[in-house]
Amino acid sequence: MYTPLLANIAILVLSGFVGFAVISKVPNTLHTPLMSGTNAIHGIVVLGALVVLGKVEDPSIGLQIILFVALVFGTVNVIGGFVVTDRMLSMFKSKPVPAAVAPGSVEKGADS
Image 1 (cartoon, rainbow, N blue to C red):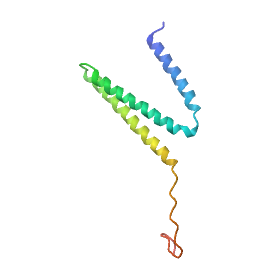
Image 2 (cartoon, one colour; image 1 turned 90 degrees about the horizontal axis):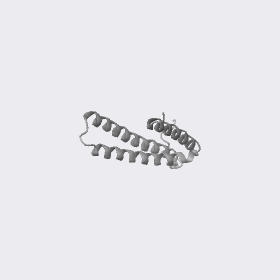
Image 3 (tube, rainbow, N blue to C red; image 1 turned 180 degrees about the horizontal axis):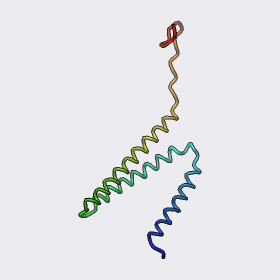
Image 4 (cartoon, helix red, strand yellow; image 1 turned 90 degrees about the vertical axis):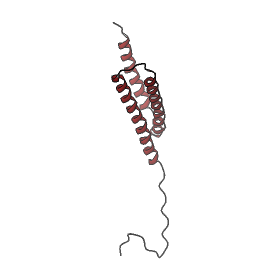
């Protein structure tokens, strides 16, 4: 009745609950560094996929396709994560102060 597949499914479900409980308690100001750390972990996953792709002896074409697609999806995930993190960090940058207009000069776009 107790199979390794059932154990793996139970671990997956429990880890999902633990992950949700941990992430829901993170303050809003810490989400950006948390996402950057997660992107680094995804980079390690991509390296693992490269190792598996290189070490399989005599792989079939189907296995090569599956490994390549997994590698592409992992890479897209890493790049997309860093793009989103960069956009979130740019929201916190202060906007440049416009140069003061000299007295007596005409502003661009002013009505005549």
